[in-house]
Amino acid sequence: MKKGVTPLLWTLVVIDVVLTLVNAVFPNHIPVPLLIPLLIVVPLAFALFHGAVRYKWSGIITFLVMCLVVSNLLENTSILTGFPFGHYYYTSGLGLKLFLVPLVIGPAYFGTGYLAWVLSTMLIGDIRPKTSTFTTFAVPFMASFMMVAWDLGMDPTSSTIRHLWILWRAAHELPGVVLHGVCLLSIVCPLPAFPQSEP
Image (cartoon, rainbow, N blue to C red; front, side, top):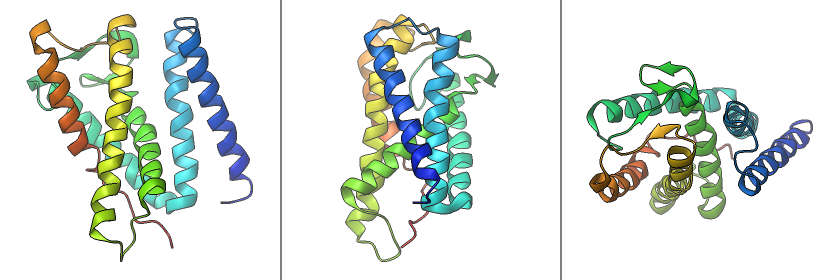
């Protein structure tokens, strides 16, 4: 790890932990227009700087672009058709949109997706040219379930309490939409295959 980057990364981690804890202990005390960008920008900055050290700038920018394109495409498709994540729509609470999806959604996927990827490589091992088949499939599989956990932990509060999006059009759709979303997030999250780690 480069000398000047480590203190910056730890500062970003502390800021993110403090924001998350304050928001959990004192819900609705930080205004949503301030809270949402902070909860997205801090992991985004961490992912960019940590990813640049671990995978070089070209690798992390490639991952960023893939996350932005894939997340916007799938979110828009789901809003229009109900596939792959079910029927929902975003309210104006998350700000400007690209088509039907707020601009903050792609960076949120990127920041959280990168953290999930790094954690899964720490638990299972890095993917390198001569990595075992198990590791090659297990790392993105584990990362996708971390993304699902993030999504399931955030959706109820963000939709029901903060009204940032309306998840379901009818109450009877809830179990199927959640199961469908969990299964498909597990498939979709590894799609932007991440570059191999440097030896």
